[in-house]
Image 1 (spheres, chains in turn cyan, blue, brown, green):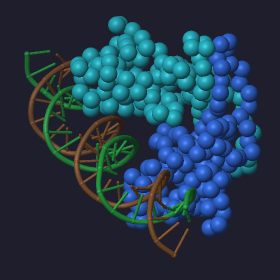
Image 2 (cartoon, rainbow over the protein chains, first blue to last red):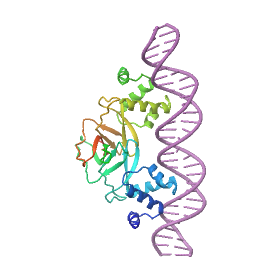
Image 3 (cartoon, rainbow over the protein chains, first blue to last red):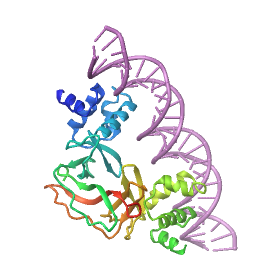
Length: 136
Length: 136
DNA sequence: AATAATTGTGCAACTTTGTTGCAACTGATA
DNA sequence: TATCAGTTGCAACAAAGTTGCACAATTATT
């Protein structure tokens, strides 16, 4: 509870019940969530539009980041302290084809790739699909 | 022209002008295309729905594959001979933040990643964002 | 070459997903 | 507790994607 407020304040955001609820949903569910997931979880309490805007704000402030897979866009908490100025997520997402959950594999880093001349990479995003330990 | 028919036939598809046009657009543009891109290029000749269905069919038959980035879903030609049964795309996509184009980096392969115990990976998808040689 | 069987297309209607403007409200600050 | 920027809900809209069905085009059959 108090933790949530700290996180919001730390990113220069007012604490509102919607933001607290969205943030705490991310924390409790752990895996990546779509707008639809959040709407399912909180939709009776908040307007669809408010959830969209909350996600947008969290993205901008560096609280969450986008996660991509075949089925669409999801969001997950930024593990390291991202801010409005810099985002750092050269990490790996694993999507389970059984349970459908997508999780960040913390601590793992993407191995270096030797790009052809002229390419100036800025960030890397690796999605691995397969079966997770829970379902395997 | 004849090439296109061969490709379609090879994947057990009837040759229709829409399919030929969609396929030849992929071949000539080279980069990954969204439904909207195709609609822009061919929309006067074909119905929106037909283009959706053509993409779906091409996906199923292994002629194209999905390409993901922050901004949405795109499609690109399968380089190696994919079929309805098996798709093989452990390749790398590079998205340029200047021109917005996404291209497959053929020939490059994703380096091995040491996953924690229990994870059974099936396919890998690496998206690199940055500046491409053309814009750099 | 004509016809039958099959597959593809266009249209209309609809659902889902995401966006924008504005009035009303709320939380932080003094 | 009065103020004011920041936030929310509502309504309306725009974009993206789907479905059913009648008709058209392609392939197979004779």
